[in-house]
Image (cartoon, rainbow, N blue to C red; front, side, top):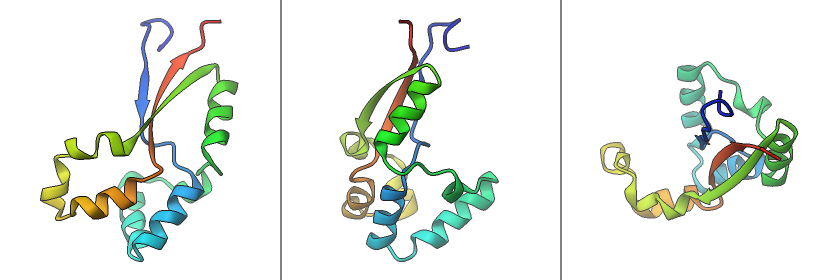
Length: 109
């Protein structure tokens, strides 16, 4: 579908174990929060997390997708949910450091 409509898949759902472990060190409540999200979405992400960003890129390339990555910290000031969730900018910044938003584009080569 992306190829047919010349589309781009933009996602932040490609998460690494490195990122998950870092978030858990920063916030001991992270596993509890993660479980809540998992129950709401029906996912079991720990089974599906990538080891690192290189593994994400390799997997996407094997699927015929080019990968562009953007640091989440570059958009943290645009997040409107922080206030309503009671999350301070400093906490959001520490949690999102090292996290990426990925743009997946069909490889036309």
